[in-house]
Length: 284
Image 1 (cartoon, rainbow, N blue to C red):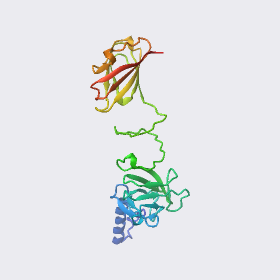
Image 2 (cartoon, one colour):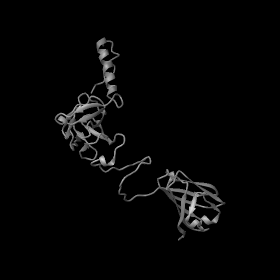
Image 3 (cartoon, rainbow, N blue to C red):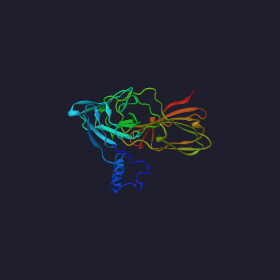
Image 4 (spheres, rainbow, N blue to C red):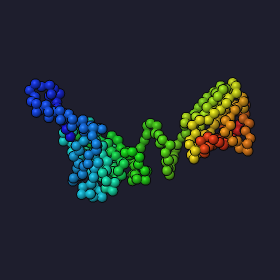
């Protein structure tokens, strides 16, 4: 890695033209070593070690071995705080980033306390030099990665919303999960839209005057979308439902004027037809 000129170096009148040219070259090299400053470089492990020259590198095993350990990363001239991104150069060669529980100079410390294998071209790990050793700051897929290509993913805890952008999540086992509730509250008559993007469990109270319901943002045709409506005092006013609702036996359920009814709606054609049925009337 390249060292920045010290503060005041270029403004020193004692600097020769050659020294100034060298300093400017050093500045250019430092920028090239920052994230996005240049394209990825290729490195090959040598006796467990790599020597980075820029921020992002594709790493290969020594002698093209099927697997190789990356034990340490040479930090010569590397300032504290410098970032380094690594991924495998060859998807058939596994680079094992070794975790050191008591890291010394140039060692690697990983967040989960275990080694991390770069065994897929799309797996990537980000490290930060803390002045002594390299510590993990992030890891994940580089682009889109098939779940079956991940040999072992450490347990992860998310502290923020995650979006899968309408992509398929194959063969998951789900435990202790919840569903987002779209709590409308008092409807107050007029038109009330039920937006599936706000939640698939909907609660609301009919009051004041006639209520006309509309449904929006169902999934695309070929993907099933449904929601459950927990409606209070639904029979206290006139309720108008979308013409696209196809009630069971073509009979609209009679809702209670004072109490709770549970209705379910299902579509498989982007809302062209909503199959509606009473899951429970006059719930007690």
